[in-house]
Image (cartoon, rainbow, N blue to C red; front, side, top):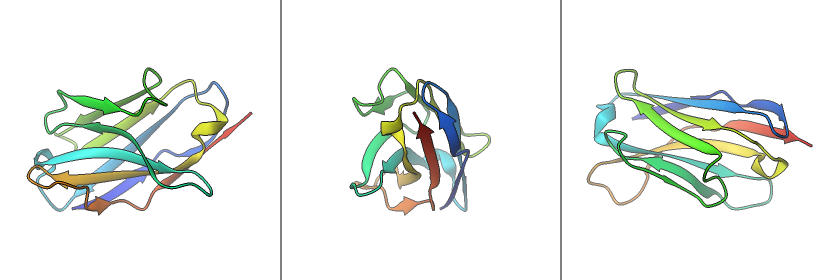
Length: 118
C-alpha cells in the first residue's frame, strides 16, 4: 500500500491543523492505520492509531484529549485532527499502515512537517 500524507504547515501555539493520509494500492479497510512523529534530534514516536473500522482508537499520553484520529474507508483516508498545538508538537508526522494480520507497521508515507511557533 502506498501512503501520502498532507496538511502540515506552520501554525501558532494554540492553533489547529488537520493532517490527511491517502492510501492506494490495497484494500484500505484491511489495514490498521497509525500516525507517528519525529522531532528534530529525537526518535520516532507513536502518536495515534485506529482500528480497521474506526471503532477503536489509541493515543499517546502526550496528545490525548488534543488530537483525534479518524478514518474514512470510502475515501481510503486517515485523518489526524490536532488542536491546542504547542511547540513540543513540532515534528515530521508520518502515517503508517499494517495489515490486519501483521504485528508491525510496515508501510510508511514520506511524512509531512508540522511546525508550531511560540
